[in-house]
Amino acid sequence: MVKSGDLVRWENKDLVPHLVADISLQKWQSQNLLPNDSFTLKIKNPTSYICKHHPTMQAKLVSQD
Image (cartoon, rainbow, N blue to C red):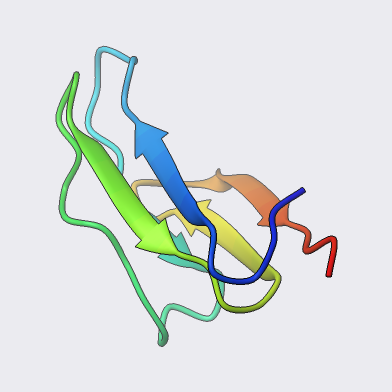
């Protein structure tokens, strides 16, 4: 769980690239994350997200506010 205003960091510890984006593909997205790259986002609202390279990889950040 995250609070509004928290910074969330994704780190690619995989061997292949990933690209994190909100599930609507319209609000935000990371750069292409090569192995060992990271992406940080300030969370304002609960959000669902996917990997654009692997659309079956999905998750949701839930707010505890």
